[in-house]
Amino acid sequence: MTAPAETSARTASTPTAAPRTLRRLVLGVQVLFLVMMGLAICVGSHETSPQRLTDDLASGTVDTVEVATRLWPDTSTMEKASGCAPAEVTWRRWGLKHSTTINQPLGSTPPSECTQAGSSSAVASTNITEYLRGVDPDVRVVRTEPSSGTFSYVGWTIPAETVPPPLGVVAVAVALLAMLAPLTLALVGPEPRHATRWAWFWLMCSPWAPWTTMAYLFIGTRGAQPGRRRMTGGWALLLAVLLGAASS
Image (cartoon, rainbow, N blue to C red; front, side):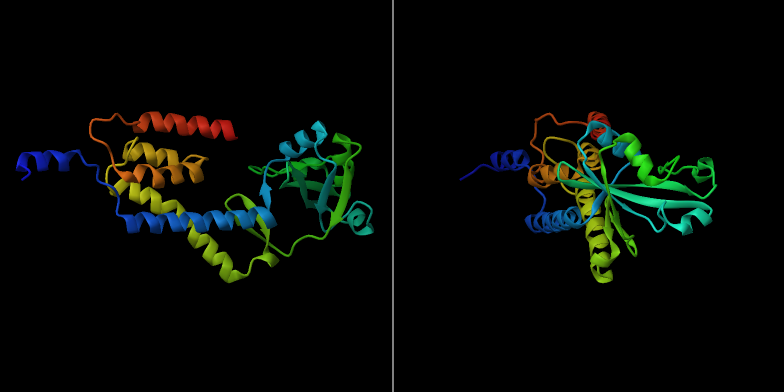
């Protein structure tokens, strides 16, 4: 017969894990989110800065760019027009498609008028083709038709015609659940393993959230081990900041 004191000690030393059903449900949402992210990567382009385009062209890693704009430099419409026309530039780097926006002045409009406060778009001092070939003379510029609209999903731009409205609503709902469910579980669930509640919270708010969230679901939710040291929130916040700086 086991003594009551031994039973109490054994119970106190056993980590309290999150309910298995709840863990599986949150994990299922994460897997569904990763699947949708994979689809977004396949059909969309990553929103990035004009400086990234310039760097890639200057390095010679890009041989072809696609430009979508409603007004081209060699059209009479552009010569008679005034104002600024945005051009969506897309290119591939390491197999992934990237995109950025460059504003081009129309007619006699000075480039300074195409600069918008708070905008991350670059301004072409000449037409878009000359602007690109000014960075890389050998780059191949391909004209494409502008999309009828775009759908932005976690930093990826997807043509609206490829995303039916019901699927877009589901994708947004899954993204919100994938973000909020693990954070809520970390804050209100049992004490997690290897790191405190706030430590896991900050790690899951970092740019590496897909991987830190999976680490929490597979490791952290198994419950804290009595007597074992854990990462605190301050160190985790510092690590999250460093991860953000490294990925920028």
